[in-house]
Image (cartoon, rainbow, N blue to C red):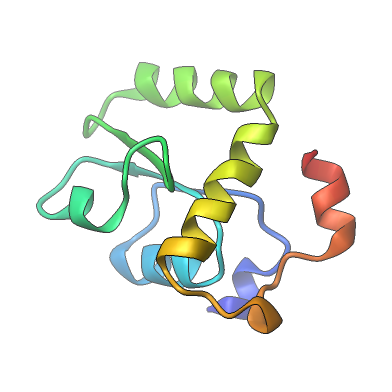
Length: 101
């Protein structure tokens, strides 16, 4: 799974397995509300939690991220700190950091 996520800046609406892999890789996520999801993803710190089936909420979040690209890097730093991803295993290349910031 890590290979498939390599180079990703953000993962939207992942399954639980993909969610776990994304967070392990330090990649922010957009997830829909479900049982226990807020214990995995802290809203606006490691990604966004939106109401299930709310396409307008997803649209708003994407617009926010497009207008505030530094937000993804801030979330990524929170994930790396709180999910204990080892820096040497961090798939985010210098090239990708330049694209985001």
